[in-house]
Image 1 (tube, rainbow, N blue to C red):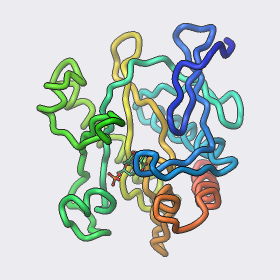
Image 2: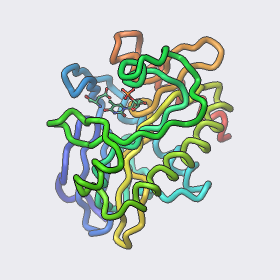
Image 3: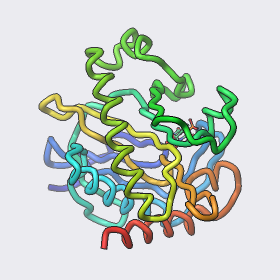
Image 4: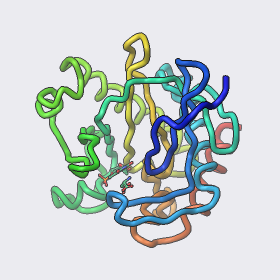
Length: 239
Ligand code: TMP
Ligand code: ASP
C-alpha cells in the first residue's frame, strides 16, 4: 500500500489516497486554527502528538467494541485509516459546561451537568458549523434515517463513558469533546476524524489547569507542552 495523491486538505489534517481503494492515509498537520480559522498559528510537533494520542484513543475505543476508522500508524504524524463516507454532523458531548454552551445558555462556566449532553452541529464552514436539532439534520438529509441520529447519540454517550473513566485515571477531567463519524463500505457507522486535545477539553483534576486547544484559543499557554503531557499521562495509564 502506497500514498498516491492528496484527496482533501482540512485545517488540521491532510488526507491522501492510497493504492488500496479501501484505505486512506491521514497526515496530522502542525497548524493550529480557532474561531473558524480567524486565528491561525502552528506548533512544530503538534501533528505528531495528536496522531499518537488519537491512535491510543481509537485503540482503546476498539477494545470497548466501538468501531473506528483507525488501522495503524505508519510514521510520527501519519496513520492509515479505512475509507468512509463522512456524515456531515459534529457530535459534541459535554460533561461540564464551558465554551459555547455557557455563552449560548448562560450556564455558569464549570457547572457539572446532571447528565452527559449530546449536541449536533452541522459541519459546514460557510455557515460556521451551526447547532442543529434532529429535524434539521433530517431536512438537510445529513443522515438517511432517524435511527442513525439515535445511533450517533448512543455512540457519543458510549465513547464518553469509556473516555471519561480513562482520563479520570490520567488525572484529567474530560470536560467535553467533538467526534465525527462516517459510513464504511458495508454501511456501518464508524468513528472517524481524530480524538485529540484539538477536539476535546481536558482540565487537570487537581489544579483545574486547561490542557487542550483552549490554551491557543485564549492565549493561555503553550499548546505543545500541554499536549505532550496529555500523551505522557495516556501512556502511563496504558502501561
Ligand atoms: P464549543 O464549546 O466551542 O462548542 O466546543 C465543544 C467541544 O468541541 C470542545 O471540546 C471543542 C470541540 N470543538 C471542535 O473540535 N471543533 C470545533 O470547530 C469547535 C467549535 C469545537
Ligand atoms: N476548529 C475550528 C477552527 O479551526 C474552531 C475551534 O476549534 O475553535 O476554526
